[in-house]
Length: 197
Image 1 (cartoon, rainbow, N blue to C red):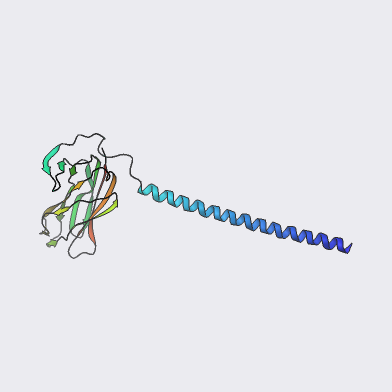
Image 2 (cartoon, one colour; image 1 turned 180 degrees about the vertical axis):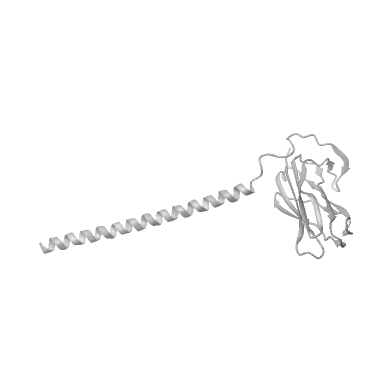
């Protein structure tokens, strides 16, 4: 009888060990499944933030009129579509209409988003060389700043030439940064557009 009890006890201990392994194994599986789920949700959230909007400010097929001017590469300028909204203020320099939404822009034409920078302070300011940063898309064109010294109350214009051709089509999102004297950082302006035919 003693050997039967010992045998029974060994069988119970073996079941307990197997059950523990099973529980530990299934716990590990649950943890791994949760980690995979969290990673997938984070990836979806990041992708949805970067995805191009499905609507544009200019309706498809907008007939943009040529301005009669051409870029240095011979691409014809057309009226710049879309609209600018928002206000950016960096130190004493202010831009009303700081976020330019071009909407849909045809390929093989150039547009010229333009911002007016105004010194709202009581001292002259110096503007540094503007720089474009591509967030999505490609191929920023030249930036042209009018005057670099602004007296109190004075304004100047900044233009950003954009022209895309096949292979450069799709959603574009760019930041334009203008250093301002006496300030750390730069004035931030934005332009977006969906370049396609």
